[in-house]
Amino acid sequence: MSSNIQVLREEVKKQIDVADERMLSMVHALLEDNTSSDWWDTLPDDVKNDLEESISQANNGQTLTEEEVNKRFPQWHLK
Image 1 (tube, rainbow, N blue to C red):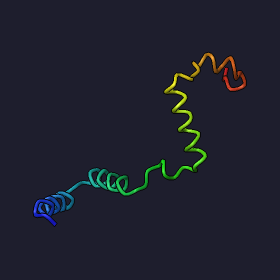
Image 2 (cartoon, rainbow, N blue to C red; image 1 turned 90 degrees about the vertical axis):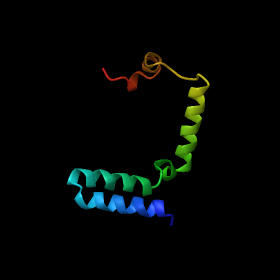
Image 3 (cartoon, rainbow, N blue to C red; image 1 turned 120 degrees about the vertical axis):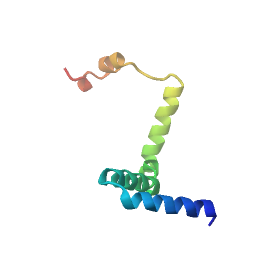
């Protein structure tokens, strides 16, 4: 381990020892987020495929305005 990392670890430990609850919660959330898997990896393959197809369609200009959707699918339109 390089000395720079060791020094950084020691500095972080000192700060953690005097941190208030708010700061500890933020650090904890940061560490949890860093170790948790990407939400994309948790999706089923069929959902990933549908999303990738949707993104491709949007990138190719194959989109509908809200007004077009409301006309095409009136049962989805809340009044």
